[in-house]
Amino acid sequence: MPSTLTYFPIRGRAEVPCLILEHAGVEYEDKRITFEDWPALKQTLPFGQLPNYADDDVSIPQSMAIVRHLGRKHGTFIVYLVCNDVLIYCFRFIW
Ligand SMILES: N[C@@H](CCC(=O)N[C@@H](CS)C(=O)NCC(=O)O)C(=O)O
Image 1: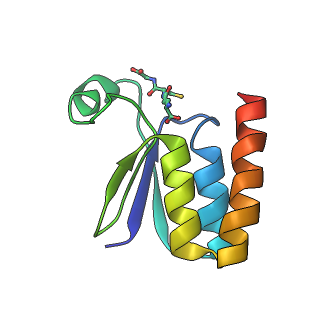
Image 2 (image 1 turned 30 degrees about the horizontal axis):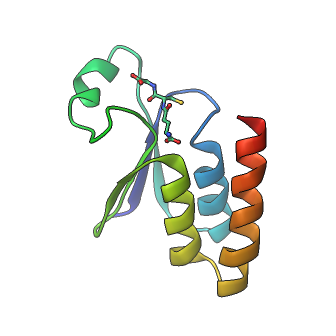
C-alpha cells in the first residue's frame, strides 16, 4: 500500500513531512480529515492528535518523529543529517 499522511485540511504540522515526501517523489496519500470526522478518528490515535504517518511497516504520530523517519527512509545519509535537522529547526522556529 502507498504510505498515508493524515492531517487536517490546513497547512500546519504536516507541511514538513509533505515536503519531504514530495521531494522524494514517492507515491503517498495526502489524507485530509474533515473536522466532522475528527472525533471518531481521534479515539484511534495513540496521542489523539494529527499528523499521523502510516505505511506497511509503521504507524507514526508526532510530526518530528515522522520527519526523522522519512529522512531515514527516503533521504541520503547527508540529506538526513543536514536537511532534516535544518527543516526541524525551521519548523520549531515557525511554531
Ligand atoms: N507534538 C505534536 C502536536 C500535534 C498537534 O498539536 N496536533 C494538533 C493539530 S496541529 C491536533 O491534532 N489537534 C486536535 C486535537 O488535539 O484534538 C506533533 O508535533 O505532531
